[in-house]
Length: 425
Ligand code: GDP
Ligand code: IMO
Ligand code: MG
Image (cartoon, rainbow, N blue to C red; front, side, top):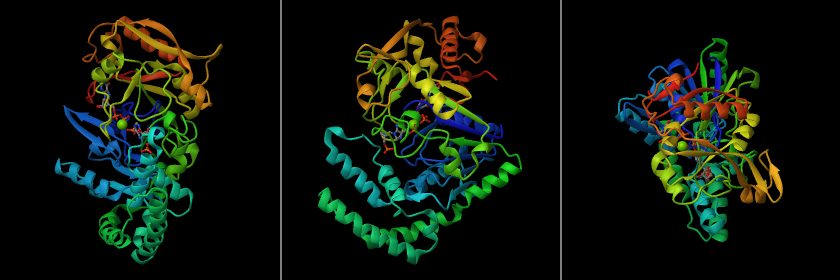
């Protein structure tokens, strides 16, 4: 396996957690390179569901070491709660989690700003997860962020917190008419956080470099997905990091040449949570049918996910941006009830037929999908474990995706459980 990246190829929630968990059988290390507690990655083992937010999905395997790279933003209270809840169920995290010194810390004022700015935006809000992601990355790029390494020096940290809280309070009270935050309370809170976080603080770049030299198997787990990428997504309705594969190098401190394989997780239809363009979104009653069949409710916020047909324009775009070598197709079982399946092959905008994902937000919003209708298979496939056993129409659907994207499929998921997978290689 060597060094392999797994990314989301649509708007997140493609089933990355399940795919990463399964690939972790062969991994020594699983590392996240971006995002934070906005992620919700579900792993189901023999019917028991675990939702991971900050900790990589490899944690379910007792011999795997998990890393959070410098590109991540860390929310310590959420992280401790996640560790506690895993340990309560016998999954010991202890010395299996390394957090980069260079990762940024999500502070209470980041959540307050996220909340206040979404409220103030009214109908135009992004529909964020409310975890303070955007404001934390803002401070990182504004060079006023607090990094994990800063927790090692409580005196300096206190001064940094005091300054930042003073600045944020001005902003929160004057601009958003929101409540003030108390710097002293935050400092006290961080004295405790510092003690609890210390054992996990590490030089992740150095650790991974040594592991690469020892030819260890490293799995890199993306959060979110291509269309939520700050550069390549449906801006401004995106997250504030780069979920695409290129960021794996910067977000972990390893050379790009070390990455040998990119696996794109691709849901057999499309979903998105939050606001923003979504060309293949369907209307009612199909919307509710998709949501019910696929259990499409957010793993982090519980919000109903918006649903629609599979979009080849997006799949091809994602393959290009991230250099995807193979697909891991997920949730194919959800399509089993449909007599006919629509696949979007291009968009129409006025008289133009568009085959490449457009940059113009107004075209992304108004683009009308051009659909190709494929026959459904009308048969339960959730117990199928080999390609040959799949109904012919189902195989045709998969072949069509491979042919039209030019990327071959490595595995197909036909249920939430770890076992419900068909491996092609
Ligand atoms: P992630 O954010 O990409 O890890 O995906 P989420 O965990 O947020 O959402 C995927 C959802 O689909 C979870 O509830 C999974 O348990 C579930 N799931 C994953 N693969 C399959 C599948 O092949 N079939 C079905 N029916 N559910 C799946
Ligand atoms: P996983 O890793 C789906 C969406 C939010 C919102 C936008 C910005 O589980 O696939 P943020 O809180 O990041 O500033 O919100 O991004 N979003 C996700 N949607 N899956 C996720 O993660 C998401 N993380 C953020 O709904 O539209
Ligand atoms: Mg998710």
